[in-house]
Image 1: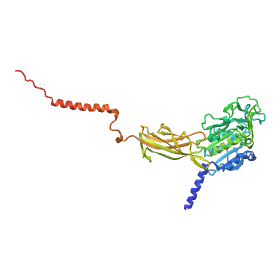
Image 2 (image 1 turned 135 degrees about the vertical axis):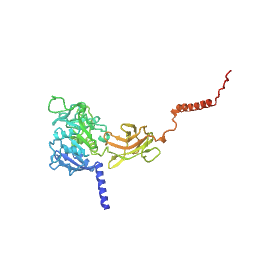
Image 3 (image 1 turned 135 degrees about the horizontal axis):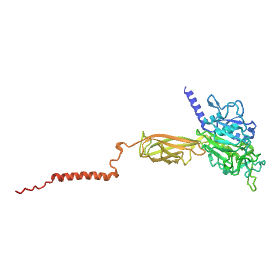
Length: 437
């Protein structure tokens, strides 16, 4: 019996570890199996990091993401921009349910984009341009361009400054050839990872511009990301070629005279960093031990009293590879909340432990020690600990209040005055005058 229980515990720990760490079961949907060879460097980087890749064509009739209520995969890669209908039990609704269940998705499109990817983008706050359109830039295109100016050279300045998402600062520009995107301005969860330059636009390369383009200038997104409220992550790329071996190994040089030539593009470093983020190898935080108590004590009381001096501490860790290490952020804040925050303070850090000391407000009620940390590239960290704060007991009030000293003096002076007056009145005897006869 004990052995069976031990086996169950070990199995549960393995499941938890597989869900927390980046590596896991990954379904890769392709337009055709030839893409395994054209994108082999990217897929090899995933395999080398421990991902179990299952390659299938996007219209495979045996496709399914869920079986008997359990997800079959931890991550999903869609490199099938031209698919017009997913096979099996996979459709846009199934993929959004997969995201709602905590799954991570990497989507790469192209100018030949089908309706399923456009619908999936719309569900996540991303709007792809029409089929057969491309991002065009007549000033920032590569020397290897075929004359349509659709082989874009994306400057490193147009990439988001978030190390957890895109890795170290890129030194080489990124090659891009594909469809443009725009973000829903009302969706605060969408992240602009890489946008086009101010001279770019999205339209049909072979047609004259007869109407205002779908996306113009820096509003044209080349890479976009979404971190849902359940910390599931989705990355959209307008170019499936961005992840190809050809672009990974290609030199980069703008066609403008005097432009610097880079022997290798920044595509591979960017693609690998994006895959680490979207599959939750980077930017994952968790809460450890949370403590609170009065100053000079070590255990929390049943209830605090107003104006108590309190010490609060919380341990925050981040995932680094296959282990948890102390988080090194310096902008974690604590709020002491009833309905609105009564106290807001930045926590000091010592290793992975964040702490502060403060005085409770002169207000009683049910409060929370709340840490709500939400930063670009990191999972949403939330911790709330509820405590009660009561007013002073009758024995805890001061006997004499300094500001009331004038009233005390006036009261005792009246008492003394009445006492003196009584003595004088009782002991005073008037001399009686005799009446004259």
